[in-house]
Structure formats: structure tokens, C-alpha cells
Amino acid sequence: GRAGEVIVVNDGSSDRTAAILAELQQRHDRLRVFTQRRSRGMTAALQQMFSASSGDIVILIPADMESDPLLDVPTLVNTMEAQDLDVVAGWRQERRDNKVMASRIYNFVMTKIGGVDVHDGNWIKAMRRDVIDSFPPLRSDWHRFLLMIAAHNGFRIGEVPTFYQPRPAGSSKFGWERIPKSFLDVLVLKFLLAFSDAPMRFFGGLGLAGLIVSGVIFAYLILLYLVAQTQQRPIFIAAGILAVISVLLILVGFLAELIVTQGQRIVEVERRLDERDREPL
Image (cartoon, rainbow, N blue to C red):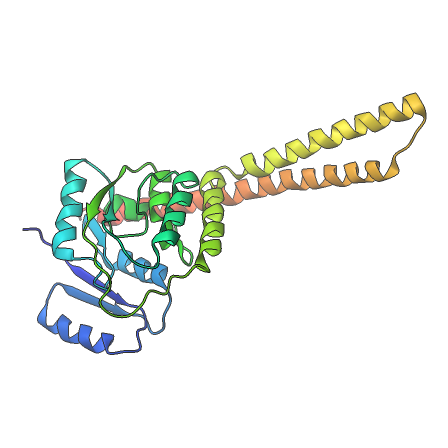
């Protein structure tokens, strides 16, 4: 057997969840319970669990009984070790609920934009500790994009068919209205992952392109004036505005580079302090 722990995060439930968990905690030494005073969402609950966990492998399983831990935990861990993976995503088999089409749209977007080639990116997962430690501070609803972040950080991701059954009680809060929000979140995260380490590539690229376009327009206007003695004042003003905006974008790129550099220095200092704290006395 393996040594492990079970961490349950009660996200501000108003029913008897807290009382039931307190009773179970008294009977099971390896059960740890954290209760949010109010509902803060899945992402906040996961961050609480990530901070509290201490194992080399962290497994995410919902508490609505759609998954069977006795079957799924060994399946995820064995697949991870057999294929030398860093992340293993469960793939729900014979799924029948009202979220199938929405889930397909989500997984299609994740594959095309996020670069994560799995069938079911928003189900149970097993992740190594290195993957957890690589996550940036997660914003609201970013729990859906853990695979996308892990793939960007270079971790090996795989999937395995897993058990699935409809939840015996309650109903999911996921609805079609979340799809546009999730799509926008994917775009924002894709931008941050692509340019957060080198923002000048984005802002400087736009600024340089704008300067080239405005330069071409100015050259055309000068040539037009010399040849035909004609002035195009509206076009001249528009080109001037474009040139000013382009210069501002380049300056924003420089400022963003300074901010990123300072942030990287802070991260490096924190890493060295952590290494020093782990050194034996």
C-alpha cells in the first residue's frame, strides 16, 4: 500500500456537509478538512488543497460521487508510473448527462488553442508535485486550464479511460452561459503564457508594425505632395496618431519588461530562501 492523505475542502456549503466532515475527521486520522467561510469557487478550493497537500502525487477528485476513488486512484497512479507521465487526465466513459455537448466544445477549444490533446480535460487528474509547484497564482475559474498551464511548462500529459456514473444527488452549476466566459479566459491565459516572460515581443511587435505602416503612409503623402502638389490632411493626422500610439506601445513593452524582470528576481530570491530552509542543520 501507499501512504497518503485525503484532503476535503468544503466550499462554504450551507447544508450538513461541515458537520458530517467533522464526524468523519474524528474517525479517520488521514482525513484533513478545510472549510471556507463562504463559497469562493472551485479554483480557490483547489489552491487551498494544493497548499495543504504534502504528497509527491496529488489527485483531484470531485466529491459528488461521479468518480469512484477505489477504482480511479490506482488507475491514474499506475498509468502515470507505467508511462512516466507528469499529469494523467481521466477520460469519462459512457458519459450521459446534459453537459456532454458543452464539454466537447470546451475540449475542442483546449486542443486548438491550449495545445492539450486529451478527450476530457475537465475531469479527474493526477499530477506530480513539480507540476503543482509550477502553477502561477490562479485566477477565478482557472481550475479548468490546469492541463493547459502544465503543457506550457513542458510537463508530459497523458490520459486514461476512467469510471463514471451520474451524480446521485444535486445538480451541476455548469451551464451554457459559462462557455463564452471560458473562451475569453482561454484567450487571456494563452496571451499571458505566451508573452508574460517576454512582453516586448507582443507590445514591441505591434508598435514596430504600426511605425512601419505610418512610415509608409508618410512616404506616400510626401511623394503625393511632390508629384501632384496635393495634401491629404485627414490621412496625415491618422498616420500621426498611429505613429504616436506605436511609440507608446513600445514604451509599454519596455515598462512591462522591467516589471517582469523585477518579478523574476523576487521569484529567484524566494527559491533560494526555500532551498536554504530545506538544508539540514
